[in-house]
Image (tube, rainbow, N blue to C red):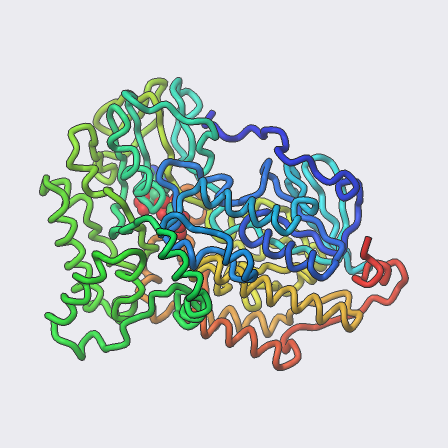
Length: 572
Ligand code: NAP
């Protein structure tokens, strides 16, 4: 058994009165970055709301991913919430790209500062949600046996929160320790002198490898496909720099709102072919040594859409990798040949390529010698057995829709969301689904938040969903359902955005690929994320509001049992 599947007891005893209730106006599922902000908005409005999370404590992705090297690759000060000036003024980000322990401390600080814990229930995994058409209510089944009802369900369940393991024989037989990076143990893992395997070379593994290479006995990396990666260039933030950041917060968030990716990094708007090759090289040399995603997002826009431009830039990055990896054979293995730079989500790294210059780090190319099984003592490829003390599975996530598939969600007429999304999601604005009234997804599939600096997209999505609820409460509406036509229009728009992007050809979670999930292993493109960029997304969702929530059908169920649940009568 890989570790991390048992549920420890609640760290935070739930508010008993809140836990004993069986009806709420709003139930938020998920206590991560999105859920915490969502419950804050509802608390401020005095709404009868609670939050359920299957984990033992808050934090979502930052509660779970405790692997060595886990850290932001968004600048810390663009990742934090923007909603409270007081919070912005009191929090000191210690590093430009802050690590997991501090990130989790930050989220706990936010929950405590705004007294949000009393709304939260942990070890409360929602197994099923069924819409009651007559009452305009959702009926939820929690794993602890409770049945709860609510008018609105808000799914803040994460985009990368359902980890996946390889389908390898023998995983249960391994006698050493093994875990997915998502379930990294809470207590320190003794690795000094140990023989450690890591499977995968995505953004997570690239962080782990750079961090542990000099702390383990032997590290063997099992790589199926290499990933393009570029330096994070992290560093501390001094008191003076933090004071300067605080003074600039308005400008920083305004820049994030302007940029397609929700970062301070804005594309170079000169045309790729309008400048000389020397000018292009000068830009790339500068960006490579700067912190963060500039190398990806402050680049020429053509690298995302034009094969030749992308190939020229990829060749430049390949050259930088060759300069960093001493052994030319290893260097070539680390350079992707099946896709260009930036068409998959780019990992940012610290000492990743240098790790392969160490004598204790070994690269096994499992595209040449595939993994065959896990043995009692390690791993077997097509050519030999390897012995290990620890196996780290850094094998990614059933992205975007995976967390939705974990809940048995039934809408009007008993239609299952799981069935509806079998070939990929279809949504209205990424936040609503036709036939599933009152089910809101501030960061849902096809929303702008999946393809942006997550917290920036989260605040946009939460604010839009909260405004929709307010609109309904003000008018006594008890049901909101987007029309099929509106949903079709949005999904077609999302699909069209992929057509111009080179990323549509890549086998990555952006397009729904995952070799470990049945149905997702062949790279059939699923239109998961909105690629139009933050400004266009925000304009689109604001336009719907300006036109009186065009595309959404509101209804009112006037019966007293239903009216009782309206916000005005629901305050405790
Ligand atoms: P990932 O990018 O999907 O990478 C998974 C890796 O595991 C790939 O190298 C994949 O190889 C390999 N793999 C999967 N199944 C395998 C199998 N059965 N046999 C052999 N190899 C297998 O997952 P991730 O690294 O966890 O990253 C996911 C996303 O999380 C990132 O793209 C990013 O958005 C987010 N993330 C963010 C941060 C941050 O903000 N700092 C850090 C880490 C992750 P193939 O490519 O051949 O499939």
